[in-house]
Length: 449
Image (cartoon, rainbow, N blue to C red):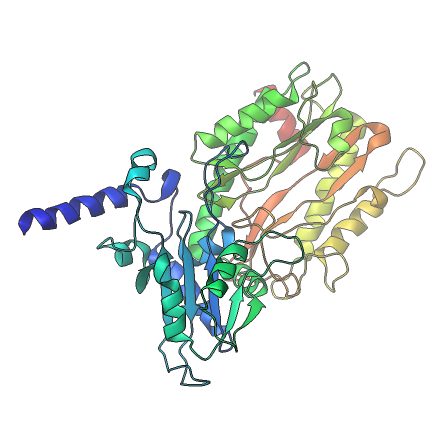
């Protein structure tokens, strides 16, 4: 008996050693459990059912398997082929028995032959599965049909990621399989879970903000290194490589998005990602690049002169963009301000009005028409994170403020992007505070002084 117990202890230790996957930092189980309970409160008598995407190796599988953001947000589970069921407590109704709050993580059975290639996995029969995952129950995927038949014999509304048109969905194939297996009663219906999760993901908890801060700090270090390496003759690709090396060695598993390093006329292309040009004398260089730490993104842009000193015109446009960001920051009011263009108390309006009333183009026209994108967006598990933009900015929200001016005729594009959150007291906090913004600071940094 002692040897059997020891075997279980060793197996559990080995499995724990494999988590989190790829060296990711994971929040405490209690954080994910709290999110599931909050979701249950929004289901209005229905249940939530989400599926993790399968592992599909192929030519685009550069960084290995990465979980679906919504699935990970609820579970903290980063392995493929799992499913999660969340059901609020309910009284007996429509042939369904009464039930307490119910949450089940469904895992595939372990494939010991495959694990010789992939390493040990946690399975539904692992003795410490509930402890490792933080779920009340962990069951085999093979038992999902039986669980549904037992819990909802009279039908229920299932909230899942329903595909829209040709849009891919993790739920398409699993739901078809369950339907073919007669798991769903006649009165079963379906609703889209994504708006409910977007509402929850709008407000970050302290653990999420800490992970975003770590992604941001690594990305700030990368921006410092890249700025010091910029000079005429250096390729955009070299600068991109420096950025990715620097945030990678600080724990970021991958870029939060395709890095943008645009010089000269490329600085005026918003989503330029070829990074194939060579920086020329007199160019301005836009670097929109940040890493992703433990699945949480950052988003930073700095604009610098190739020679280390701004021309008079480059400095003029740069200072207008910086002034626009400061105008948006000054206009911020917790619980009142919004990000989007056409909303009341919009920070976009403050930034746009500043740009449009300061400076002119070569034809004497106001510069507002060269500010061609939104002012900001939420940041979290995705760089453009899920969230409710209809509500005002408030404590726990994390977002960018990123005004820009792009004048192709002058081969001159400037964007300054910083990441902010609203603290519990309603104060706007800049996570990128340590990365220089002022043109004099940029020039000093590039001079090596």
